Length: 159
Image: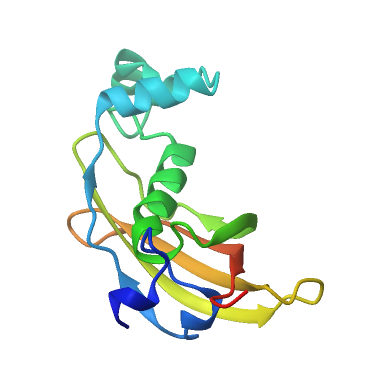
């Protein structure tokens, strides 16, 4: 695909998505204690599993704080935006099959892929369609740490 075919901000249009394609995103991110503290506090989540190092060291099997799973989910989807939907998403419609099969800790570096799981024309709007994305996040050793299916309402190119 040529850059001229993309939205001026870089996103792909409904027509551009091919079911079965896997996109390996270029952005990666090392997660920090500050990420965990800020996200947990901004979302009013007092779970000591995320914000209390002493608790984790003395009362959990992990021995250190786990990254907040909703932060991990948001980061995984955020990493995908530049390569897929920036400027072309009308709305997120939902997420299903959200899983966190392995722990993520401070200092881990996250990378992500997006598989195009399906797509269909909108029944109510001729200028749009629905694309199903299967997002997967991995830490630096290749371990899958998060996965979800996301349905997005996407613009068509010539709408």
